[in-house]
Amino acid sequence: MTFSTPDLCDDHGHDVQVLEPLFSNFGGREIFGGEVVTVKCFEDNSIVKDQVGQPGRGKVMVVDGGGSMRASLLGDMLAEKAAENGWEGLIIYGCVRDVDELADTDLGVQALASIPRKTEKRGLGDLNVPIKIAGVDIQPGDFIYADNNGIIVSKQSLVQQ
Image (cartoon, rainbow, N blue to C red; front, side):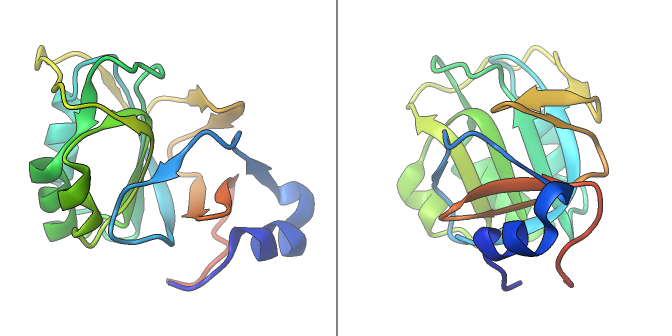
């Protein structure tokens, strides 16, 4: 997949929304995008763990972790499982860990920060619900694109896979 978010913004104008510039790249893919699967959870990555085990080709998991800086919602083992199952990437409004391993994994990962602490697994959270992160409302089935310039969201696909 090749694109640049500035070019997509120029070409599609008001058809895209731009997330506030809060995220950093942690994954092995710096450019990634696809159809949105949403997860809403707070300091519990049980649903993230379940979803990375599902087929993810052409999809990006967007995780609303409430912006928590106290626990990681993604580490090396879950990232590897996501890559094995074809996920394009994950965008996490929260933290990740195992950053050296994430950088070596063929998966796009953008998150707010890193922290070494893992989450508790209590089975809490919601799958495929509307979320709002970084000033943008995101629905399951939207399309999201990320690179080193930022992250944008569209109601329709902007890039051929």
